[in-house]
Image (tube, rainbow, N blue to C red; front, side):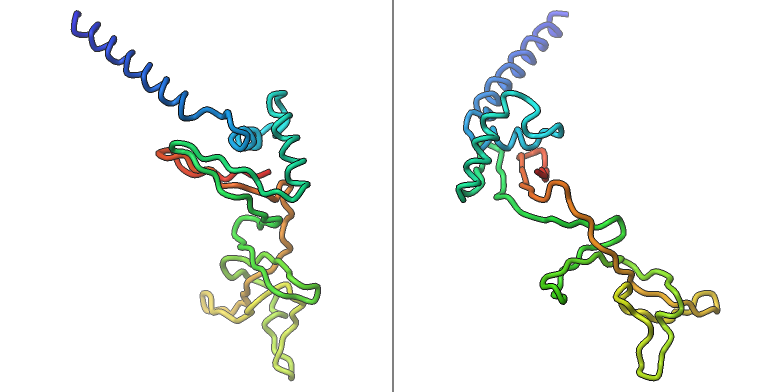
Length: 179
């Protein structure tokens, strides 16, 4: 019984010292860390009154052309902000290229899909019907029957929050925060 009590005291002291150390090194008392904490809130960066002043300062700061603030501490880092306005549905990958209107982004299926036979039919000029909705159409033998397959092309979806930062916490992992 005496040994159990002694171990409980040692454990409590250990947890208390960890709490004091982590409190000292993980404080968000600088503006960059406050901004990152507020932006990472799923309810929005200004949901809580404590976040309004640092976020309003951020908008003014960025409007003047200044760079995004960073936050680095013991075991904590954040990247510079990035801009990625488009994303694709599952089983599609984002592809950027140059089109008639300049830079175009499209979503291309990650594996060939069954498509209309008209995409694989050859006319006398050597091309089948293709309005840009498929890539690399070809015939493929499946169970003794030929089927036209191709990579399908879709329009990308537009993100509601197109900017992000990557936050890394040592021993925990990396989290992407969209804003």
